[in-house]
Length: 153
Image (cartoon, rainbow, N blue to C red; front, side):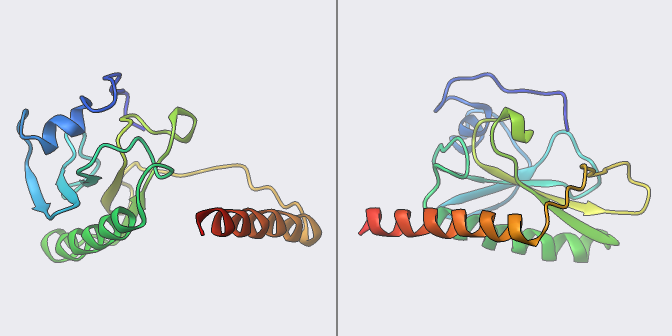
């Protein structure tokens, strides 16, 4: 992950300043809910960030409409990157919180064209808890989703 970390307060973060036109950006796409712009820390040519226009720190703070809009914009950018840069692959990366690798506390998704040997790696220790434990995790998530659905009604 990049070494840059934005420590600005909510609402005046670097991405809010980009959205508001207070600082320049190489804009790729914009609609009512999203802004897509070139990442200053390019991994590969065509590395774009897709951010919500409204300040929301992470995925837990965005709306369903913003979530859908970010993915729709990411797909548009991915298709354009495929045509423009002919990457061998493409990675979508979205991080939440410092422990998750998020460096700017404004919801955004990285669209990164990929090439063999480009230096970008994702590794983690593979844990195999077994089918009973996995079913227990699934049950916890289903129960939490049920709680969310009933509390939203």
